[in-house]
Image (cartoon, rainbow over all chains, first blue to last red; front, side):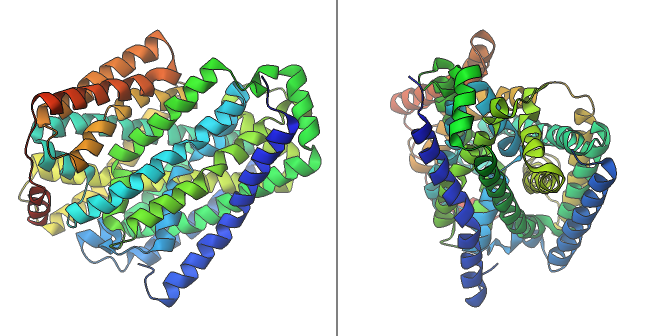
Length: 40
Length: 472
């Protein structure tokens, strides 16, 4: 039983989307902490 | 591959940046809490980033492609289950902060919860693991720098270790956490760009058909060794995180109320990284690459895919991944040695001033020790890393049960660590690396459950708070 091209594409595309968006999430959190003076 | 001159230039540039930032953030550190635990006030953004960056090691950027190349699709997915450890640690981090608001190390907890025998067994396991990880990171540094730039292994390894030692020395945990944020952003962007490039240049169809033709077993969803690896890696990750002071020191350092959300978010955002990094290795057959050593598969594919500019990007990503874990490990292991060996065994009456000097000397000593052990390149990266799986998985149950069950007793916890490690090591040599953590965790679990049932203790949680507060 092998993984199909479509399933591999879905797995990698979902993973890649999360990885691509993560820097934006981190920068958003940083801005929020900075504004509320809760950076460290 | 980059030429050595470009490699040296990038190394010099980033070294200066990290060292400057280490000094800049470290100059505000006034007391031992500031140096060791960044003032115990780290917020959500830096908390998430430092957990992610520390867990994205060279082992993720190098071993994930290596495992995808050796174990196929389950190698990638199995590695990504390392994130479960981060997510499971989220409630523990909240409880650790609540039970021990003035604690310093994971060793503090084991000593106060289970007594001196268990503490010493735990320290042996924890320090063995820390050195195993340090050596694997130092070796990875040398191997990667050599693979990507041609700079000799010994030089690359020496440079990466020296830089991390220097900025950790200057800034303590504040420098580590601050640089981790920048390193996380670099790693995420770099890995995403490489994967997009592989898809754009080759495409899913060609990658899939080339693998199906030359290495069909890599696409097999029922590869037994790979499925064992998946569960083994999950438990290995949980064991690494539950016991290691790298994660405990962050639980102590995060602001009240941040630990749970930070670890949970970091786990969710870390999970796809090994899949993306591993997928790059599946491009080997389509690219017609001849890979001489499995642990070099990631950098080789990346360099072939993206030419000179891409090679620069890969080098920066890998350098960031290495530094983000090395610095964390240096700081947390130095804390463990300072608090549990120096203060706990040698100088119980040491004042804060003496401890600050000792902390810096310990960081220097650790760097030197790691350098000496890294000089001969003894074994492949994954083999070295998985050897420690038997040890760390045996601590999962003593730690988790110790935090939540007041009836778990000291003798049971000690026995669980010893029997779990023994069984894990036996299965490592008798069966293979992919079952060591599985066996160690299972034996440890049974030991904790049976001994708790046979001889229930009656531990008072207040002991943790009051004794840690008193610095006992």
